[in-house]
Every structure is written in C-alpha cells, then in structure tokens.
Length: 82
Image 1 (cartoon, helix red, strand yellow):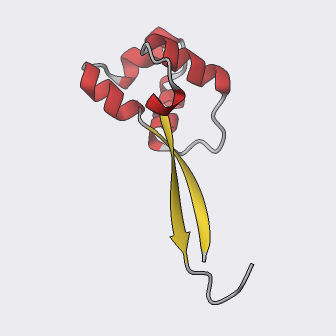
Image 2 (tube, helix red, strand yellow; image 1 turned 120 degrees about the horizontal axis):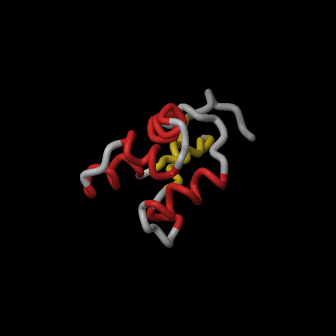
Image 3 (cartoon, rainbow, N blue to C red; image 1 turned 30 degrees about the vertical axis):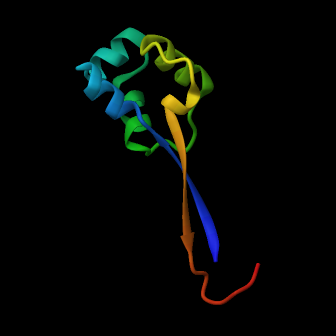
C-alpha cells in the first residue's frame, strides 16, 4: 500500500467564518482573484510562500496549520511491493 499526500487549504472555511469573499481577500492581499480561487480549489500545483504569507497576514493567522493541512490517502498498489 502506498500513501498519497494532499496539501489542503482551509481558506474557504476561514473566509466563510469571517463573512469575507474571495474577491475581498484578493483585494486586500493584492493577489489576482484567479490566484485566490485556484489556491482555495486546490488546482494550483505550486503555492508561492509569499502568497501564503499575504493571505495569513490579511486573515491574522499566526500558525501555518490554521491555513493548510496535510492529508494522507492510502491506496492499494496492485500487490506490488515498494
């Protein structure tokens, strides 16, 4: 069995809790709305540390685990050993 790692952002939940839109977050961070959307949807293959820093600053987040989490998915690999 192999584990697949997923990095998942919690930004959508944070925005919902705070009554903030993605558009407002983009405005405050000076990031493109499409960048914010892609980070939230998990469609970006690379997340820039500066982008995360801007988002954390605007949302007043001091611990990275408030912003992102690591999820592990275990899959069977067809009987092959690694």
